[in-house]
Length: 125
Image (tube, rainbow, N blue to C red):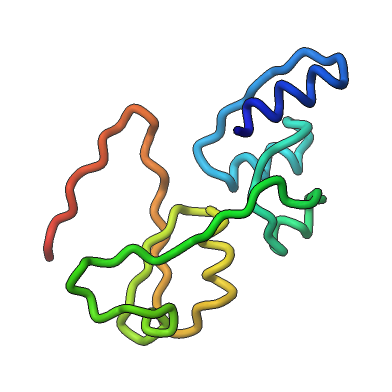
């Protein structure tokens, strides 16, 4: 969707589109802040809004916790407890949101794997 939007915008402005790819939303935000990119497609977030200006959202998404079928975590309130670890992508919109909303659970940020890298299966400690 975002590539299509970028093409339409460039066409309407009579500009040649140059697509840039970033490993994380944080890197895309940094490129926008520094002027290395002119427009980006990122989730609206108050932290990012300190350096960037957002339009109205063009899409809304729902984020949810993904847990094992046998997990006792059923509601969002169940998650924010001591001893609960929540894994999110580094500098992702989810990480920025959860940093503001989780007070007891531990947020574990992990880098996004390379596009060509197959994630390793989880191991038990």
